[in-house]
Length: 132
Image (cartoon, rainbow, N blue to C red):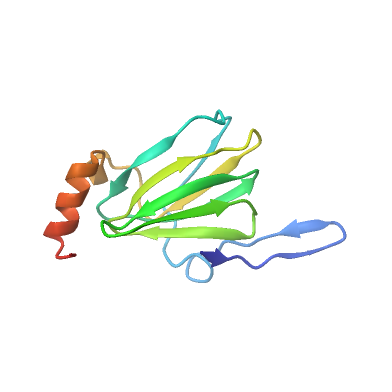
């Protein structure tokens, strides 16, 4: 989990997301997910070579991250905390609140070849990378 520095006063808050400062990579792509039904599940993939910073800027959702050895659930429910995901990590998203807006900053542009969409292929890739 990454704590994001909030700046603000009685007029409101601002959180700067600067590459090389808060974001540990150059940002090549930004997208956001919204209007997701509460019972919807998203993700269910990994990336071969991608860094992402995921922030729920409104509402909340749960993200499960899996490195091939252990699974961990993270509840994103504040705009001043983010989840940094890099390397071979399987991710699943669920439990979206009706007002959830999930923004993702990525180190690379979209590339379908970087996706691993089957869990069995992910486990094989983890083994090939030399992880137990």
